[in-house]
Image (cartoon, rainbow, N blue to C red):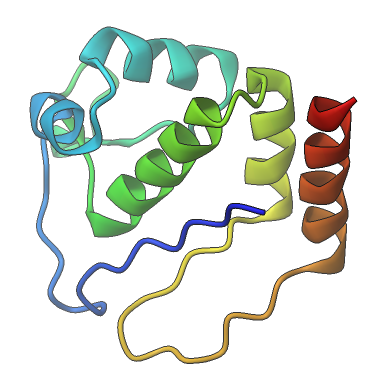
Length: 119
């Protein structure tokens, strides 16, 4: 079983990133990030100045979520299933956290995916 936990600096050490920064750091193109936002895989990011047309602004928690989604996608999981993972909550931790308790529902979905792939 494959489970990725991405470690980033603890809260309070948060940087802001543009969509091009996030694309470079995550390996997902800006076009794909916009598409994921449009279909609901990613929540809508904050915008500069709070305006709808403002520049997208992402923080470390956004980057962590995007990297997690990218990792799930690389395992062959469909976007529809990834949306369920995101809605249920992701297994992401900040530095200093030591309890990596895996949610039972999410664990069952991962095991089910692995079993389907073996068949």
